[in-house]
Length: 108
Image (cartoon, rainbow, N blue to C red; front, side, top):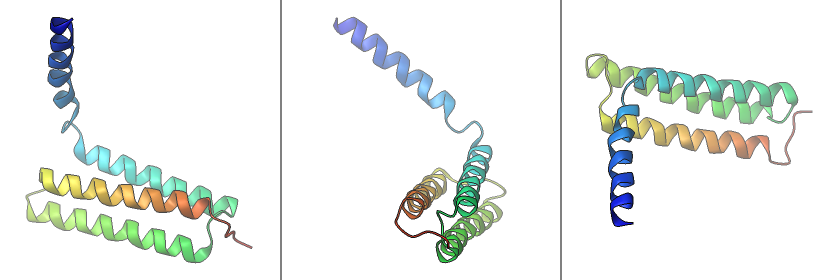
């Protein structure tokens, strides 16, 4: 049993890093596009008010500007610390999109 557990943990630890870091610019871009789509869907369905939409778009824009500045400063790449920060920021915006779409306020 111990050998099986050890082998499972070892193989998982070897496979996990292979998936990370391969297409980080694509991951950030794809997530940005998905979140923009969620915002657009909320506007189309009336779930997001104009004020909520403006606030969400502004936050997305600020993240995009920060990523561009960081890439210029680092020769076109983001450091691991910057990638983690962008991910946390995108998580926060994602939660805000969900909350705004599911609150009682609707576009009239």
